[in-house]
Length: 237
Image 1 (cartoon, one colour):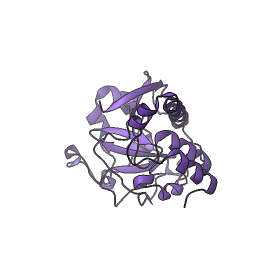
Image 2 (cartoon, helix red, strand yellow; image 1 turned 60 degrees about the vertical axis):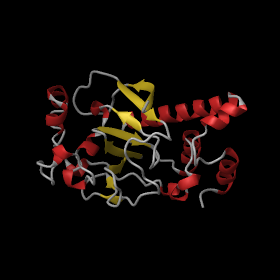
Image 3 (cartoon, helix red, strand yellow; image 1 turned 30 degrees about the vertical axis):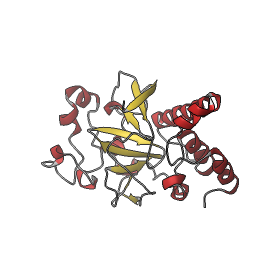
C-alpha cells in the first residue's frame, strides 16, 4: 500500500469554484513515490515567481509557501521536509503558483510535456480535463506585481540527512523550533496543522505500543528520541 489516507480538508484559497473536499494521503517514510532526495537540496529562486526549484535534483522538486512540492507518478505531492513523507494532493488543491511553473524548470518532465512550450506552464487543462479547466479559468494569467514574496527556506534541515533524517513526529518538533513561517494560503495552513496532528498521534501510538511493536514500527535511519532530545537542546549542527 503506497500511502495511508489521514484526512480530508476543505479546498480554500484557490481561484475559481472548487466543489469537493481534498483527500490528503501521507506516504510512509520507508515507501518510495519514485524519488529520493538524500540530502538537503540546493534551491534557487525562479525569476518572477514566488517559487524555488532544485536544478541539481533528479526530480521535479519545488519549494513554495513553506512546503516542498514534487510532481511524480503523474500527480502532485507535498511535504514540510525535503525527503518526505509525501502527501498526495488533488489536482484541485495544488497552488496556482506551482501550476504556473514553466515546463523548462521540470528536471524530469513526463513524456507528454515534450510538445509543450518550455517557457509556458504545462497545459493542465488539457491533461486534467474539462471539469478542472472550467473551475480554473484564467489560472495561468496573473499580475506579477501582486505575487507574494518568497517564503524563507528551512535551511535548518541541512543538518539532518542519512541516519539523522527524522521521523514524522520528530519533524514537527524540529520545525516548530527552527521554522516559524506560516503559509500565506489558507489550504497550506490547514495542511501544516493536519500534518502536525498526525505526527502527534504517531508519537502517542509509538509510546503506547508494546516494546517489540515500537521497535518494528520505527523506520530505518530515523533519529532516536534520545538523540532528538539532545538536538532540541542545542539546535541543528
